[in-house]
Image 1 (cartoon, rainbow, N blue to C red):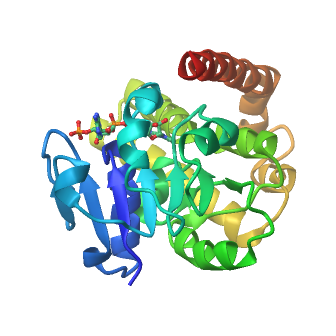
Image 2: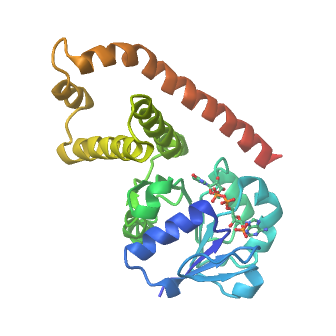
Length: 264
Ligand SMILES: NC(=O)c1ccc[n+]([C@@H]2O[C@H](COP(=O)([O-])OP(=O)(O)OC[C@H]3O[C@@H](n4cnc5c(N)ncnc54)[C@H](OP(=O)(O)O)[C@@H]3O)[C@@H](O)[C@H]2O)c1
């Protein structure tokens, strides 16, 4: 049995645990450390690493990136040459992590997004232990239980996928809410408007994934010449690309600031 210890298991850690349990993983293989003692549904939760009292094969860092320097010495006491340290901390690069956990078997970065909770996440993976095929073969099926889990060739690629996918649930939530509000503005009941908007977005993404067709083609199939969708796209198209670009640029700037904070 391979045991995984989450050190910090809030929003994202709990989402990952939910996905693994949904996939049929044994709850006995997980322990979570939460200073508040707030239980993580389905698994053993303790308040301190000492209380967990184990040398697990996998340690997942699930606290805030700003806590890394303060918590690393205590975490490192539980890391042996058999431990894979898995970091989901935004902005903490592999060089920093390797310096803090020199005894680890390997350092693996993962940048999950929230749909891991329903096993439809995007979770890029990166390790400098590229040559360790055993490690990758061991971790790939485990992470794939949570969604699309590609190994990245560089930390830059890892960061870029994280940017495209990481905050997307928030952006899509805003998009759905805006459509729902527009429906309400046209007289629909609030619940009905929200359900219609949400299901339309889900169905569109599902269709795109099922057919694998280019986005241009999917849009074309909905757009009759001189029809209603074409009229709508004439408003949306000139704004959308630039808007997304500026949105991701702002997130990138903030990420660089956070990375600088972590390095002190
Ligand atoms: N949220 C996202 O979409 C997302 C996406 C990708 C990566 N991440 C990364 O995931 C990490 C966690 O983010 P989150 O959104 O899950 O934050 P969160 O909900 O605030 O969770 C933080 C966790 O850290 C725990 N913690 C606080 N102090 C601790 C200590 N001294 N020792 C051990 N654990 C401690 C908290 O414990 P309590 O529960 O007891 O308060 C909580 O469980 C961050 O590093 C973030 O960069 C988040």
